[in-house]
Length: 435
Image: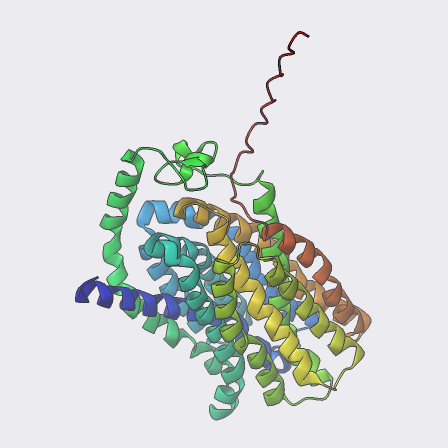
């Protein structure tokens, strides 16, 4: 690779990390300010849950549009537009009407949904065999953005004299910075079309494991020649989707409610925000390690066990020993979050043969998965209002580890989505030799 190629690759990697930083900031900056939102706007627990649920619903409902937008405008162009929309949505939360708090969050959520779906496909297409390693770097950006927003929003609010609206709005600045750094990637549209044309014209070949596929990797999917890939009847794709939904439900419920749970257990606002930041920060080392290990392991089920069991143990600790060993419970939640989402991202790459299937699996998993996850913060808020405490909500969160474990183990089995089982050929009868 020449000097220009190295420079372009470095610029792309920096852009990927900055994009990733902005795909969590709008979602995790609200949780530490829940008490201020309640006091200033008079919101109930259910309303706060709806504020957390709204962007997840957007992630679920808008995700299916991402592949079509990418086909029409180019994935890199759509990601650029998403960064601008995230900045606009976050900035809208600065304005006084409470409705704009919800509307701005929804706009940002829709943009995040599309970016979430397209980024794994961009990584797969631009980095090929190195995709699993780069996915680890991308997951570091996601966790870093979530940790920064969770940990710095309250200090920023205090520095601004208690202005929570401006503290939320300032998170529009990283989105604008990322958009500027991403600008060089917009020239990829012509190259993308040329690559697609070359892939379509290339002859079929046989993979090293003996499976036939075409150069674009779509030959193993029925109907792929039409340009549309559907995985909704694929069992492995559903395992990935349910795993995505369950780990997202747990993660975003922690982002929305963990500071409030800890404050009700006697912790101060700043310390509660720091605990949430710790949960998010642990995703950086564990996320990178998970993606790197998953790419080298033939069987990812040991990682699936960690992704499901560690957060369940954290919720059980908060339930049975409230106010004590809080740091340990936060660490367990952080290890689970730092393992679960990077593992899902890596499975998007490992369970698919090419970028088109990666985008299809990513779209399906994030559409159905986030729709499932959206119910959790709202339900937890409603259960808290109904029961008047955190015992029942924490018990429910601990029990979510069971379906997450089942789905994670199924998603981690070796193989690819869209595979058609090979027909069983009966052995030819052995002729009898007359005595």
